Image 1 (cartoon, rainbow, N blue to C red):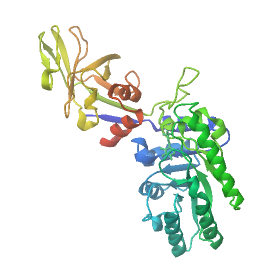
Image 2 (image 1 turned 60 degrees about the vertical axis):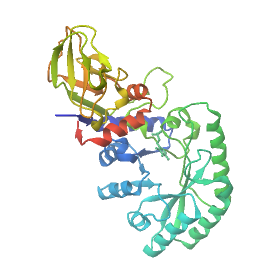
Image 3 (image 1 turned 45 degrees about the horizontal axis):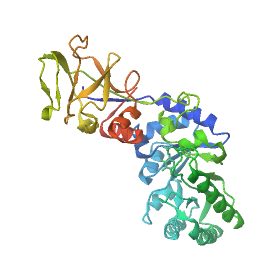
Image 4 (image 1 turned 30 degrees about the vertical axis):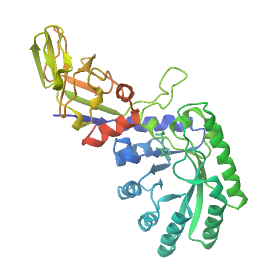
Length: 369
Ligand SMILES: *Cc1c(COP(=O)(O)O)cnc(C)c1O
């Protein structure tokens, strides 16, 4: 065996329950973009529904369509595309769609008109993230056009939404500023007679730290996979359980002399007679090469070992010490209970736990727990 990526779907469901309780009455959208942050799109979606998510969300339209094809009949929102859609398929599949420009709005309207259906839309307002969505200056014109199309009967604007730049830094002044821009946008919509079903701006961090920004719907991603996006003031982990574990087994244990260089370039040299353990996973399996040189750790029999020397394509080495009880076949925990977390890897290699989850989850077939 090489690498085992196990996903605990019950943990995802339990995490969504925790978030639903935190959501102060707002509905919960389980964000399952990027293959459910590497946890499996359809499985994570099912677990989110089980935990009480009344919405699912994916950036890519293909993933929303895949959820429908897999039998999900609930509300699903997708948001990342240009004017080429695929709006015919999204309209046919009854997926809620985001828009932030007149051009995309017209393209969606054309698809709905052709299908004889009423498209459900969420206007994405860029309140300051500087990424997708309509800037406030262009909002009045976009709302006016949307209202005309709504009056024509081809679409209904059911939501207005936005996304925060600094939600993971509670108290950052941009959060309140973005919230105030959002309120201005909502007022402009109400003035024009839109009756919005869902207003939403909160990701995981804001779901946990800003109840005043829950509005009608919150959109947690990382937290539903069990990774706390911000520190829990109560010193815990918000009651969240990590859903992904990454393990393998020791392939070889062998004695070496003092002064043995280890792995390519001999960046690590043993300083005594010792036992080396060979771990049969490498950067082709998602193990960050930047974790070599002692930066990242793994756990074997409950003890932590830094990676000795360089991470190779399919393997790396740990120095087990002279008196080790570790034997070939023992489990090696790269991520999971008793071992490092995704955040430990992120700290070791200079990234965020989001990328660690996507990386491990994305590269190998998953084994259900
Ligand atoms: C990814 C994403 C989320 C979820 O963010 P987390 O920080 O993982 O909770 C919510 N909304 C939008 C628009 C996103 O792109």
